[in-house]
Image 1 (cartoon, rainbow, N blue to C red):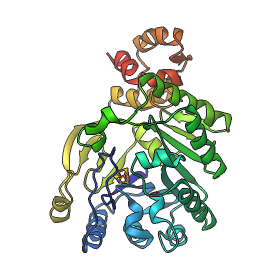
Image 2: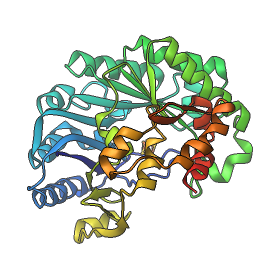
Image 3: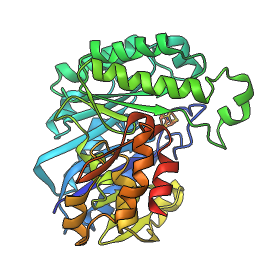
Image 4: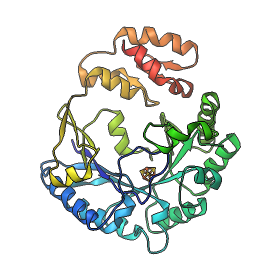
Length: 361
Ligand code: SF4
């Protein structure tokens, strides 16, 4: 079975005040060194084939389409592939990220960070580009042959309400994108937002929950289907790469802070670019892929935990206690049960950690 391949590009031109992903500013010849290092590492995995590739970060568009094409040459990728690159619209103006070259290199999916189409909200998030820049970047990608575009939205932004959320969702549909990811803003320690949280005018927990449910409603009204807690797509445009994570399939992660799951083992590289450049050593992170982990990930999907799929993989049926416990959530509109499956509803996703924890104990 071909694997998924994740390449972490650990560079950002500036740090957004809410972000705790691992990234540093590109300087000197670090990008060149990094590309060489990633290529060397990939050559060590030449016994694997990949059918999905995801360049995440950081900001992959910072290193340009040429470097991404160079990295892709070092991996054995199937013809029927999905290759996604996360792009920052600020890098995608005239003379910026070359979508035509990217398309020629096999890239067929772009994920842009919109977060919000309302410029005051974008500003609060420290985003440099305006909503119009995002629209222009989407158009450029589409006219250069990459029609499968995803936009990221954020829920729970300072000052956000249902009207401004609707403007953001409408923006996505008017831009003709095929996929939307909508993440609830989490205030992480070690970020500027954490220090400033009392001054940020953040929607409270109930308001954020309402924003989430509104987002589900609006995307469905426009023809998309929710397929995961935070992901919505027109049929056939679900992220094949991310589905591998949620279906507990194998993937290789290259780069600092990248995680892998191969042959029942998990491993990762530490969050340190210099260490990675000088001596890239994966850190063993234990075994993975047992039934509990499989169930926990499957319950993030709207297809839910399916008995037939679990039986095929593990040779046993979903334990009866799962169905018994799920009944009380079904009564409250938080879960749905069929003969073959247990899945969470949109309301259930809002409290998924508690429900999944209960089902698994
Ligand atoms: S949100 Fe994206 S662009 Fe901003 S610092 Fe984090 S990885 Fe970089």
